[in-house]
Amino acid sequence: MTPIGEAQLQAYTDDRLADERHHAVEAWLAAHPDDAARITAYRNLAEQWRAAYAAVLDEPVPQELLPRRKRRWRLPAAMAAGLVVVASGAWQLFEQAPHYLPGNGATEMVRRAALAHAVYAPEVNHPVEAASGKDELLQWLSERLQMKVQAPSLEAAGLAFIGGRLLPGERAPAALLMYEGRNGQRVTLYWGPEFRRQRETGLVHARADNGTRLYYWLDDECAYAVASAELGDKELLRIAKMAHAQLEK
Image 1 (tube, rainbow, N blue to C red):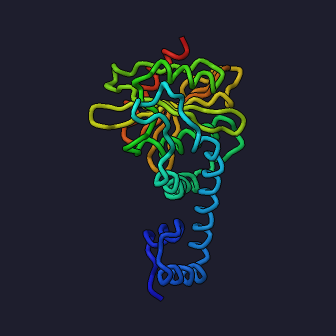
Image 2: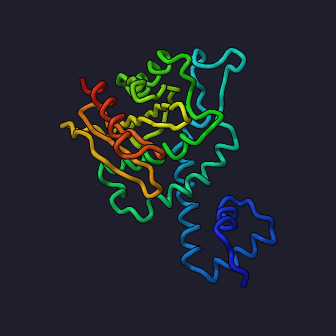
Image 3: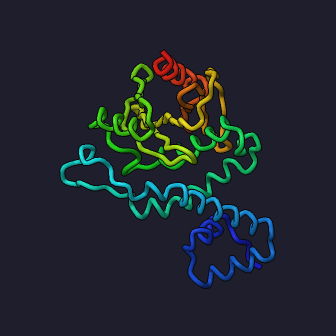
């Protein structure tokens, strides 16, 4: 039996193989239960992502946030389909990280923040709603999260605010703000009000298996996570301290 590589397994997961190769991969999986279990896990996670984001995939953005030439934006079909691929990668981030298992509020929030960063930070065409209407965007997010959403200034770290987007949550909506550096590196700030706790935690470090670094904290209004796949711990901590100081003042 000819060995099946990871690229073909991923293509099989996404239903992108021709019939001949599809049957060949099925035969391989029948003889390799570990790979079969992994592909099943990828598909299950992809379904979870589709279900989680179904409520916002077709949600219209407020008219004042859109360019005049395009009065209604919907998530491109390619990106929607691409959630399967991203979800597969996201499973690899966490399948060997028991400290990120759901159940604990902080670790579940970190898991969601890292997944959101993995989905949107690499996106080129439409990672977030444009920051040209920054005040309107933040007001809209504030209304949806039922709390004041702010975009802390990270210009001292060479990062410009480029926009934000609404995300689903299990019990309440969440938000993702995005910043970009001069060299194209991106940092996200996740807002998860459903994970708030009575006492403020201070900054805590976490790291996903793909190398995405996060600093997060929780207070009595919200949980926050600053994430980057490109910056080192020292630089990300400096950025997280800036955000923390402005949001907790």
